[in-house]
Length: 68
Image 1: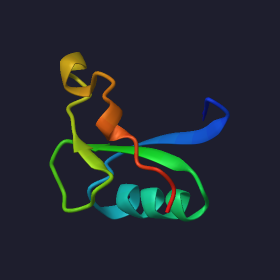
Image 2: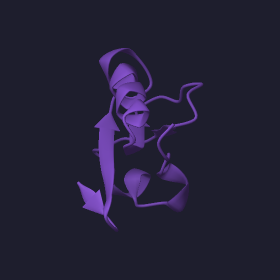
Image 3: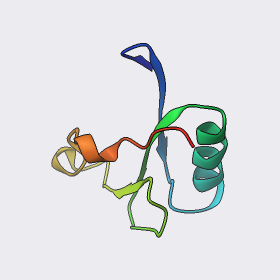
């Protein structure tokens, strides 16, 4: 997705496994990411959210993680 001319990816399951590796790969390639997960992780790009609850993933400025 392009936002203000920049690439942006939203990755679910970003706290571990394939989701975590996907965020790391995208960031290394210059893509800003929003990583969401049902549980918090030590990764600074992950935000806790339950996609079945609209209020838990309302857009927030602190969710965006710029490329590495």
